[in-house]
Amino acid sequence: MLRYLFLISLFLPLTMTAQEYLGKTRAELRTELHKYTTTSGKAQILTETDSTLVISPKDDAIRPVTYIYSLDKKGKCIYEKIITTCKECFEESLQLVLSKNQYEWKKINENQYVSKYDAHVLLELPPDDNLYYLTIFPMNWTRELYELMLKN
Image 1 (cartoon, helix red, strand yellow):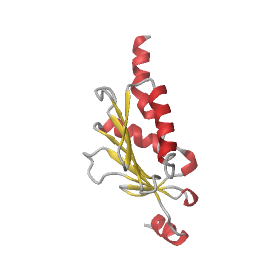
Image 2 (spheres, rainbow, N blue to C red; image 1 turned 45 degrees about the vertical axis):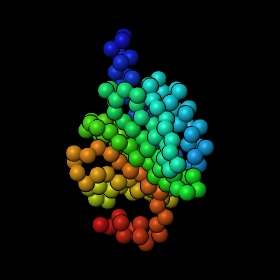
Image 3 (cartoon, rainbow, N blue to C red; image 1 turned 180 degrees about the vertical axis):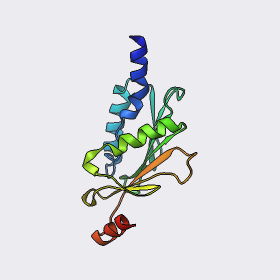
Image 4 (cartoon, one colour; image 1 turned 135 degrees about the vertical axis):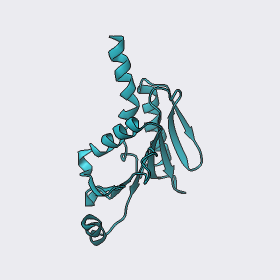
């Protein structure tokens, strides 16, 4: 039984969902992230600066996944970054993001995915296979630019 609880706890940090915080205010983010840190069952640290909110594990020996939410001058989330130090954690984080059906992700090259047009979101992966992070940006593209990205 303890083995199963341990295995389940390995995946708890991955239950944070990406792309749902884009455009939220600092106060909205702080509330959501504080709720996550207190209910995830994992020891998480929420730190803030003028331009970021960061959730990181207190002990990264089990699942070293850090979530960074960058804010603009108005205090709105302009991008999300998920950073990890292991390939398996990176792959699981990527699959969690791509599994969000409401975005209908489409791969446009080796390092980028675009959401459906109406969602206006870009997912960017590192160019180096030895780096383990992904970044999610809101986009303000036109229909023409979107169609052009899909053709390449």
